[in-house]
Length: 354
Image 1 (tube, rainbow, N blue to C red):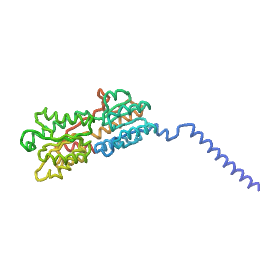
Image 2 (cartoon, one colour; image 1 turned 90 degrees about the vertical axis):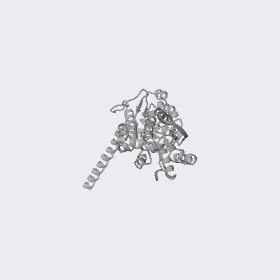
Image 3 (cartoon, rainbow, N blue to C red; image 1 turned 60 degrees about the horizontal axis):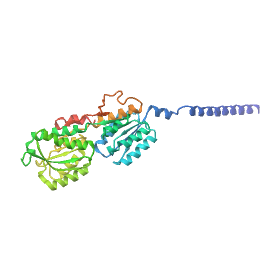
């Protein structure tokens, strides 16, 4: 009986010690930072919005942002579905969830001031990319920067390329009148890239000595379906009077090529030169197939890389350019250069998407 009593006493002591051990652990956990909080401090949350996921070019920028991460940050990616109201709500949500920096591909460039107001109220840095705010708006907040391109450059390069290739290919002047009869698919009205590409592509051809005649100019809103619909109508209206198709981006160029294919072009020697901007993989395939004359590389990989690197640096409280090779211009903008792409340097452009 004494032995049994002793055994029961020992068991009660063990249980008591175990219980005491459990009680001492809980306050220790509460008194310091939890592991999740520590991990969060080391791995900042960066809130990212893309104006719409189904934009061909932006899908590659989004992929480049993600692949540049290397698991050093948590990316909160958002599809704004081409709605500025949706994007505004997403920014509010990201701020409330504790984002340390914002990377914003604006739906409407005119909305940049509203985004800056939200970021400034939360003392958060913001990196705009691809759609450029006005310089005065960007300058209004010391924690706002931009990653993109020089808007005029794509139009200038496209114009130079078209002028040279038109001169080198006299058969493109189908009616032999010495005038380039063109149609132009424009991007989003008011978008700095759309306005600059439209203006400079044509201006540079004229500067290079070509005579031009505009048959049609309408917005295709960067969209391949809209590009096809417009091209269908133009072919029905003008037929073979069209000698050149100029587009502000490859998405619309691909739509135009679909329409041209359906109307007997690129078959039995019937050709139409089509020029785009972006050098996305689908467009490069059309160049190799002889159905697209040229495009301009809009470097998605480096735009995404620069966007992530700046956003990560400022999320960590560092200078935005710390440890990078990027430089700011006078407007606090990193400019990723464009490159002309034809069949002659197609391999270079393909490397940009690997």
